[in-house]
Length: 212
Image (tube, rainbow, N blue to C red; front, top):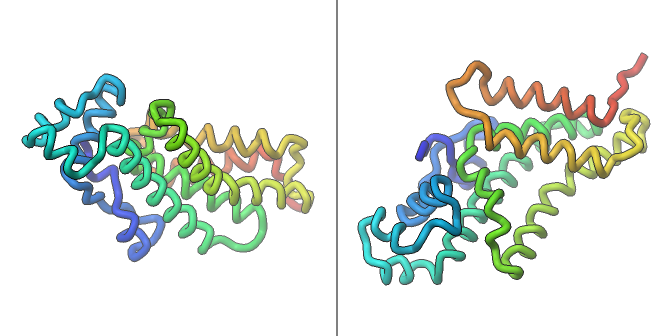
């Protein structure tokens, strides 16, 4: 696993939303992430995780109730990191809808690029129990809300010409989430450059019109 592609949310608040430091995951969670990414949640057993960590199965259960708890803990880390990035981006943005939407998209895109492994676990949400899925959807809604708010404000002010603000918001989120599946560090475009491009695309999606 590329540890440089993960983060410690508490540390991020200190260094700023554009800075990404390695996460210090407990070894059990770090190995679980590796296994889930390599094999998928359902194809990974607690026994395999224990073997890779170098402990017994009861030792895993001492710290985590079951395999589901491992996935939930990792998703919590992912949500904490993403929330931190979004809040940091918004704090720097101006009050207008264009600046707000651009900042949000850049924050999400940067997170997806830098933390692609843990971000990719969103695909395993289908493995959550109904109760945990309800929690996760609610948490995701909290992240979607400021994005929808920015789009709605832009439509109300006449800066965005789209007649489908809700669908635009969903399309922008899906576009950003897709980064985790294909982006690799060290490629021809940096995360910050990618984020800038995606902010321009997002503004095109909502049909942003500049003043004449």
